[in-house]
Length: 195
Image (cartoon, rainbow, N blue to C red; front, side, top):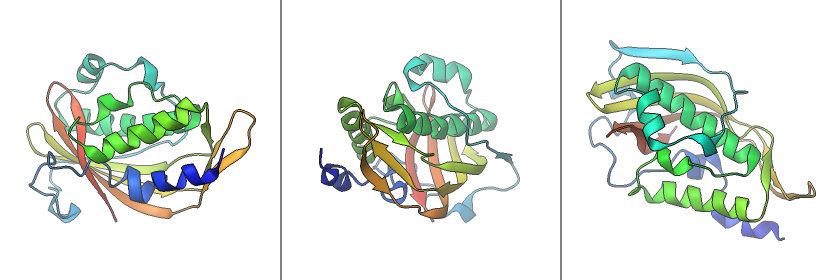
């Protein structure tokens, strides 16, 4: 297996994860800057990065029930989404990752295709994919929320069944990721940016 197959897939968190879902479905309001996020109604919660969730047991109806159309529901959903991405990286099993984003999000589809390729080769990640230090959420109106995550992107690698490294991602340091969320029977990521 050549490591060159993984490089074009843009494994970089900055290039893929945090710019994922920047399709036309993203809400147009408050899209250009995190400064436009209302500060009078927000929640800030530190997040432990070692939590692991199984993405294979989540269903769309489950997400709608667990994460209501509230600011607290949006924040819990954003935490879950990032936790599931870490789990998919660690296990190499895509599970229900698609349930966390909109179908019209072309970057999200590319992200899913990348993880599906990793899964099809029975590969998985070693090391933490992203470390979430803090998440702040705010609702701009019912069903529309913004989650700002302070993250660290450490070195991580993809290994084959024997443990041989097939791709090494260099550390990217501390970043701020903004996720735009929309509620339609459940929360979904519809856009994102990184600074």
